[in-house]
Image: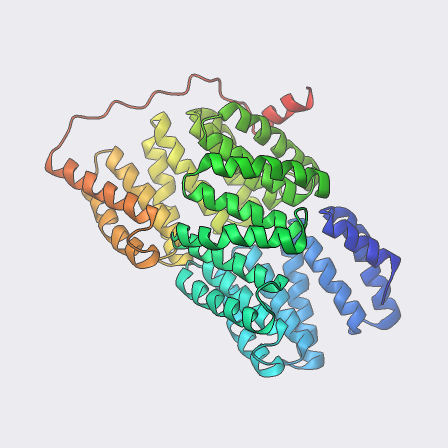
Length: 466
């Protein structure tokens, strides 16, 4: 049923103005409930809209509570195999996924795919969409080969049923690119990504949002291959087009600005990176709020730029309170929180604080092992960081005890030719050489000469005065 409030809410949502969408959709949900009852399909559909908006606003706990309530109601009223119940399972899985509770999401998605095959059929569009979601979950859990297997099948099924140029086929080809990238097969990813972008321009138009996404994906491929100039030459015009079509404050535009800042940083153009990243954080705080997950991501990107510049004190002045904020907003065991703690452990030794780095990284690694598993990429990354700290403080045997299994796990998970595997093999060779031929202590790193910020938001106040 068409309603002006519903249509306007949809417009705000698609444009990235999630607060405005929520202001329309939440009261509309209650109005529909009062008129038709809480179990009417229109009411339930509007409830899903409210859940999705809360999720986009970073109000994950509220979204999760509503998703759990929705699934309970649909199971009781319609039964476990009713399409609305299956839709509720999908929504709840998304909430677990967005909160970093990937294993719980998988416990829903695996049976959901099988139920969809049974109820709707193996080649039903909704079944294929849920199979695609399962591949996303596998990838996030570090099960890259399983994700690749599903995505390869989906591409072939799409080509056969829908044709090579169907929009859904193009989407699945893009997902296959991501899987190749995840396992370090960057050249194979590129072989798909370049013609996919051209096909998208031809079929959908140069300025279609899906085409812009594929340009962004191709830039990421170039970036992964170390072709930073090629990535930059795609990203700069992409940001300008995104501003014109979606607006400067749309989440996709903000994400592309962040990617451009990252390219500037890798090209050594740090001041230009900062000129993008600092106001981007300020904009994210103003639009989404300082507790929104996207804002936390932008703050982390800014700390990475400072680290790249050797401004480790400035990076830590943001990174330390950011880690605490992440604990409060996302929880102490959320993967993003663990990643931010890991980044602190990388920066602290650069100002000579190895002891604090160890105090952070040792429990972080243990949490990653327990939550994500021994073979998850984040766990492997934390193992590499901890080995580096042990090596720095002269605990070479302990570093060796981590690096030896790390290299084997990396070979199994990512493959022998993956850049991370190659880097870890080099570190293992170096630590063995250090043990065989002890060297004199390395001079401690120079502290940053830049004056540290007092408070995480001071630099944003500076921008607001300009």
